[in-house]
Length: 306
Image 1 (cartoon, rainbow, N blue to C red):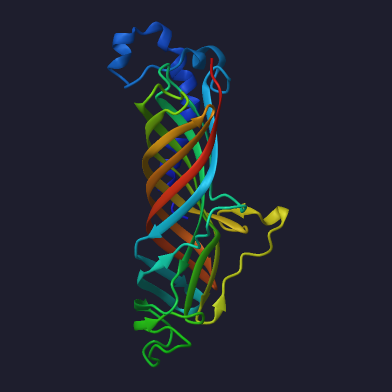
Image 2: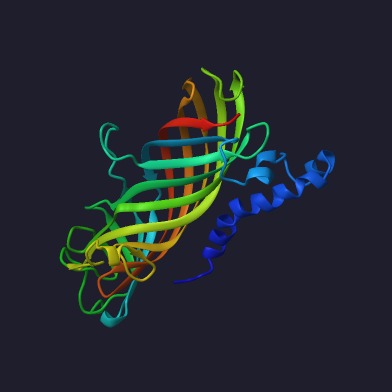
């Protein structure tokens, strides 16, 4: 895989560890000097008790996503078959189901890191699904074996305009198109005091993390295989039922409403860019750069705090 995207992951993964080191130096710096370096003052509990302590305000939530995808190009490289082609402007959709008694689409856990409880660090996991819409027509460019002698049909791809069906090109990231991210959060009270009952706050988030997929696709009648979901074949970069294939970066904004302390509802809109490589296909791999727009509704619980 191309290691360059993971530089962003390295920067995000050390954020929590850095907070402890930064907090330990705050006692020797005046508040006036500190404001010139950062927009907030870290909580004193960070330097005294470390990141994982219940003096801070913590929160956790589960919820549901409804996702819309922009058109994207999918490149397929199958060296043993002499194929290296791109299917352009693929239309995809999610597999949205009405929220109810089913598995959640997202999980969140985090804590506030300043004395005013406006800035927080959050670990998030979004479990989405991407399905290429069958019946659409798409342009194929590049090299397809026998493309010089065979025109596109309902049973195989060729250079030019193709109709995508279950045999020619069926592409799914189910179970799923997962994004595990570290986010920096800003909370601003709009109605009432922060975290009080019936209070409403603006929530803004920015973060980055790993894209982890479970692919299922059929190209020219050939299915991809990632093996059985066993303990020794759970997750990996080049093997595994789930594959770590790239990075996801997102910006999120919305509102948090405290229904009855400590229970809250959060509704946000998230714009996300996912860059994926080494997605398994039959006899090769695929790559895709995908923009998505998520509507996220979560039910949360606050705990800890003084």
